[in-house]
Image (cartoon, rainbow, N blue to C red; front, top):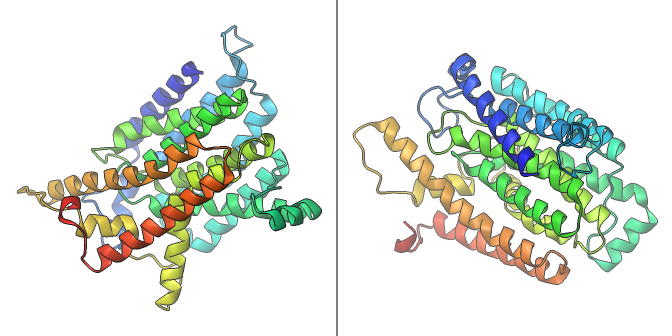
Amino acid sequence: MVFLLVVSFFLSAATCILLIRRLNAHARHYQEDKPQRFHAGNTPRIGGVGILVGVATGWILAVLAPIVGLNANTQMTWALSLSLLVLALPAVLGGVYEDVSQRLSVRYRLVLTAISAALACGLLGLSITRLGLPGVDGLLLTAPWLGVGVAFFAICGLPHAFNLIDGYNGLAGTVALFICLAIAYVALQLGDRQLAVIVICLAGATAGFLVWNYPRGLIFAGDGGAYLWGVVVAVASILIVQRHETVSPWFPMLLLIYPVWETVFSIYRKLARGSSPGVADALHFHQLIYRRIVRGVFHDDASRRMLMRNNRTSPYLWSFTLMTVVPAMLFWGNTYVLMGFSAMFVLIYVAAYIAIIRFKVPRWLR
């Protein structure tokens, strides 16, 4: 399994450096006045292609490993490997097209992620049959179509949640890496090597991308990379709960609470201000940290100063994410404890957001 991690890592890293050197002309068309832009210069936004190459190769090698004589019990099948590729492609290719052309509207991107979600539910038979809530669980058992609908909604929405937090060097990529490793850890504890392979290959490909993304910011994941993380992580999260009764449905919920709550809170915030949830702004949590907490970076060159501030923003959010990933790994079978940590995260997030907005951040955090 380590072999698959290494192969995915190196292929992703090699593809990304090739994209950086040969296919970066499209970056010149990315507007300077976009509110979510926090970098100087023209940086290619097609890192998702490198991640896709790395993870796809890893999944295929996982099937071939026992055939070619490698001592690896991956439990991977051609049906699962090809199904994962087929279901991921609509969302990922649509995201890459938007990264390159800047011409694909939010509506069409939602349609493409919905197609990926429908393919996932159809090809893999995904359904959410329990949420750890007695009344709701009974309803899901009596109405199986409702569980399929919840799974569809989760797979359709998570790619956009990852895209929302993809604002600074190393932020979304490292969050995805943490989540993949946590799912792999629990899957291996349960003896589910097949599911572990799925996320380990994605973790390796993500790490290969991060080599060039953090701290130098030579390439960004773009919508394609965010959608790939969202689709695969959503599928893996549903599979681990669907396959193993001992895993609480709140295990993936706590793992994913940061991007999910960031999305929910952003929709509420924009609706409360009378704005459309689809309109980009610069008031997300990570953007406020960049503007109001990360200070004291002095350098003669403006672009260098922006890069340094960019790089100092992500570690704040990595720490925030570890507040959910660590307890999720420790208490993956205890629903009530996981619910408590999820509620705690929401309260801390809202309190921190209000404190930053009101300029009441403690000195030691700045």
